[in-house]
Length: 259
Image (tube, rainbow, N blue to C red; front, side, top):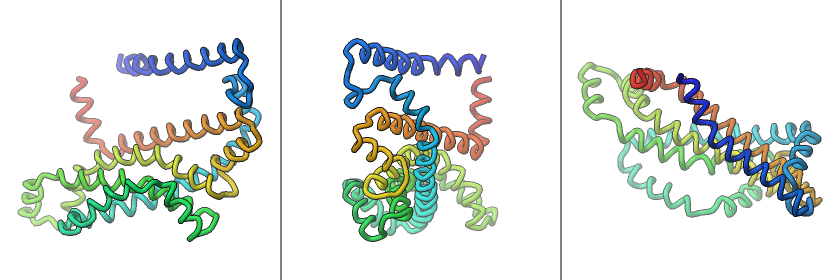
């Protein structure tokens, strides 16, 4: 019954998107849009199949930047959030800076990364890290601020050291907030890598899009967009799976509620 309920919940979005694609295909055949303006879904599908190996190659380059940027963003956000939680004056000084930093568009910072670090993997990793850092840091800071002070006091009475308190109380409380931020960051990470590739790259889905656009191969542009969407969805699901494994107490609670 639980499995059937999950399948039934997935049906409305599947039917909705399938209806859009079918309607798009019918309108393309009836109105006959030029393929360089709006290709039909069938043309996009053929492009995906024809250029599958090339798209996989470029997707691999994009995922390399995504992995490096996410790793850098996660480690930096963890260190900064822990420092801000430990030293309140540091939080008061840096938290407004984090919020204000979001007013600076990534398109303004990305060219600077290219000027300072050249055209290669490093600037793309840094751009992805910049895109992902804010949701991770803010959610971690918020999660650590929700830790029950009485639980910490109890652990200290039991003579637990700082590492044990962090492992037993602080991290379990902050984990749901962390994974919420990581889901957002994982989705944005592909966008960050694409922006870096637009400004300068030798491989990646962003450079593939630019080459297709400059050649008026709009079907190939849409095909690369489909791959970007799929990568974002896969990353989201991977993070969701990790959160399911990392928080067994959430599984136990949900099973208890369902029963």
